[in-house]
Image 1 (cartoon, rainbow, N blue to C red):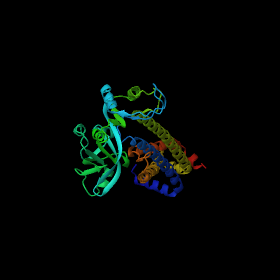
Image 2 (cartoon, rainbow, N blue to C red; image 1 turned 120 degrees about the vertical axis):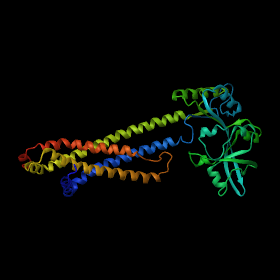
Image 3 (cartoon, rainbow, N blue to C red; image 1 turned 90 degrees about the vertical axis):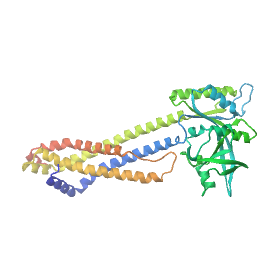
Image 4 (cartoon, rainbow, N blue to C red; image 1 turned 180 degrees about the vertical axis):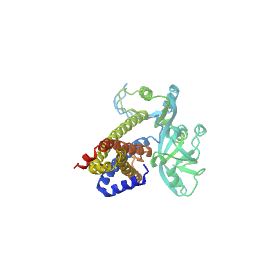
Length: 409
């Protein structure tokens, strides 16, 4: 295989047959190029869909009160449903084994001031469990705790974007922030993997918010995570049960789909998983078609090469060349061309994916990439299968008698 004369002959053949070499190499490089772009695109879509769930626990359930659309139990349609602390306590007390974390949310827009800096943001009044449900990442200080809630302390955790707006050159920890004329002590800062909007919230204890606003017990929504051991069927059954119970508590028609809305991430995540699995299956199928097309292309080119060199083969056999030497000459030349072309197509495609991927900013398409191992395996399969496709005509040509080969057209 490392015979110097043999490789000199191979390079000489490549030099003399530039068009043939180009066609063989292009067939391989193009197949690998398209395959890499296909796999990277599918992975980009998968990453985009999955990233939508990065900033929340995938076993989350969001419960929203809204307006009734059907009359029921003496109440007219159009009645606004309101959640209170009692609803939260009811769920906690009756579904303790089904719930992992739970928190209410009480939202309010406020004007935040620090020295000469001012901004309008939304306060999220929550319980400490919210950090685990929302996957909030504390970057300095701490998050809300039980003591803050029990004592109704005026403390606040601010997002990264608020820090950049109001404290561009200062450490905000332990500073006093004015929210609608009420002073709050900043105890921490956070980031969120969701998006910039998620980093523009102010988190304070829900009890503090309720005390400041007419001692209300109102909450805007309830968020919880169910038992992580539940499968999709169990999660959906629990979600349906919650909806039924909450409708019964608030005297809502069981068929009313608008009064109390539940957003179960289990169902959404399952739909995304099913869709990404379908994308993967399609990409594998199309990838196989590309490989098969490449194999056929290489095989056809090899058949043409062998036919073109029939007289040359006859001369070699006439001067004593063995069939194995003739086969080696043809196959090694093809291996060299296809390997170099495959690697070239692979590297070009991966470089293009990396370059283009950086410029794509879309929630539905993120970080398009393909594993190097996958591409190497595909390239190897394409090269080996293509060589095997040309091996049969190479063996057949090597068995031809010298006189027949010399007389061939």
